Structures are given as structure tokens and as C-alpha cells.
Image 1 (cartoon, one colour):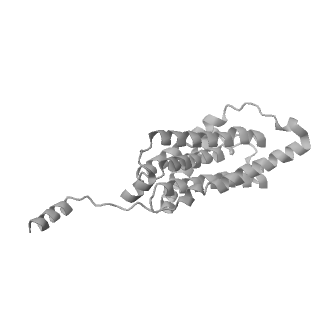
Image 2 (cartoon, one colour; image 1 turned 135 degrees about the horizontal axis):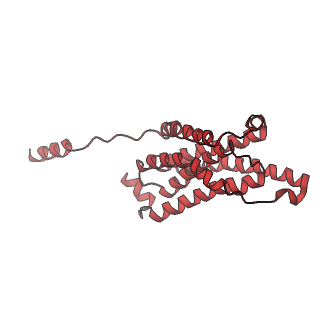
Image 3 (cartoon, one colour; image 1 turned 180 degrees about the vertical axis):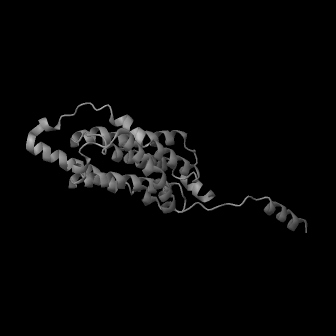
Length: 222
């Protein structure tokens, strides 16, 4: 009787545990928050004057589509990385759209090089890209940070790296809608380069402050 009473007291004091929603569902919530925020940044700076013409350009649409796909898949991978029941291979999913994004820009650089030679690939400073991408990705970054705090201490570095990649990629996609720099080499160096920089920085910070327990131990405890 004493044992049964003790069990009843212990069970009675437990707080109900709610299962975290599926990554796809949480991705949808992230999109509901982040897309309007990115659109607000575009509205604040004003759409580029030639936006209608650029949206009729197939290469521009593919580039923007690859950037947005990198953002969406990056966030999905981040949400999967924080859950112990998700497979490890999902962490690497963002590499595919990012490779497409880089490939589209690389093809444009090759076309310019074949037409104009090395002179067509000159890189000049563009001080707007880094802060603009940071601004465009600020709300998306805050949103994914809040979501990841609800996840387990599993693959923390990968989760932060993928989350930063997704937020920065969305900021870069928004930047192309109001910033008129179209030279492919400039987009690679300053815009895609800023995305990579923010991602690596987030991964390094996460690694610095991550829990020292191995992922395998975290999995078993969760």
C-alpha cells in the first residue's frame, strides 16, 4: 500500500508533456512569420525599378527559387536536427539547393567570362549586402532560434548552422528584390558569401556553447 500511495503521489505531481509538432508543421509556422517579415523589408527599401523585367528573366527566377529553396530546406533541416527521432541524413539536405544556387551563379560567371574575358569578373566593394542580409534575416533568425530552444540537445551545432543558413538565404532572396546589383560574381562574393559567413558564424558559436554531452548520449536520455 505504501508503494502504491508513493506512486500515486509521484504521478499526481507530474506536469503533462506535450509532443513537439512535426518539422513540416513547424516549418509552416516559421514561413508564416518569416515571409511577411522579409516582404516588409522589401517594402521598406522599395522594390527595384526593373523588378518586373527581372521577374520575366528565367535565370533570375531560377536563382531566386534556389535561394528560397535553400532557406526552406535549411530551416526544415534545422528543425529535424533538434529531434532525436529524425535521421542524420536530413541535416545535409540544404546542400542540394545551395549547390543549385551556386551553380546558377557560376554558370552566369562563365558566360560573362567567355564574352568579356577576365575584365568582366571584377569584384568591387558592396557595403550594403552584409547588413541588408542581416536585416532581412533578423526576424527569421529569431523565429528559428525560439523554435530550436524547444527541441532537445541533439546535433546542436548542425541545427544552428542550418537555421542560420535558412534565415540568411531568405534575407539574400529578399535583397535581390530591392538591390540592383546583378553581376553574378558580385552576387557570389557578397551575397552568397554573406550567407555562408553567417552560417559558419552561427555554427561556431553553437559549437562553443553547446552541451558537452555527445549526441549519442543525448539521444538515449531523450
